[in-house]
Length: 200
Picture: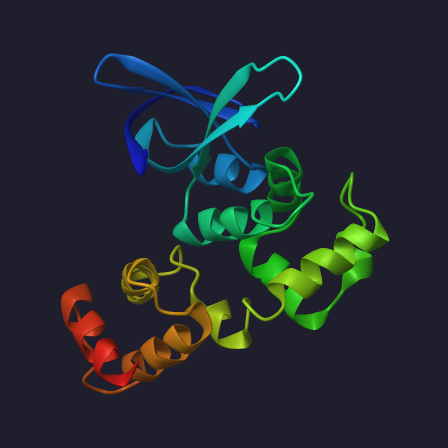
């Protein structure tokens, strides 16, 4: 619903950022990683995830905005909350405890012990996270940290677009990485998507 918010960071806190845009102030909940990334900034663009939860007993609805400095962190957040039993608060706790690349390494290597160091994550939940995400966070996907440069940002945009078209993430990652490793790798997302579509 809300892809991102661009504006002035009027208030910064380790758990939330207030972003003023077009006369409105949005309270955006963030992880410690995102807070660290924007701590020295006065304005910028915050990628967001809009969530609505309803209390079954009272019927009250809760609307929340979660903010991320990178597309990779937002993708990991969405993958985590898609797991039964993982709430948004637990997901943010995990992403505050590890950098996105560190979390990916933990899942890929099956390091459940390190995951249990996060408050609220027991051995069973840690194993469930690794089981659910292990196949999704392959080694090829480790390169998709779009904070490290324009090439990775291009990859992430293409991956998101192809995912929206219904293509599975793992094979899409392999195809995009193979294309980007060529000497004549495309420099715009449209060309990259077209080339990937021919191989998927």
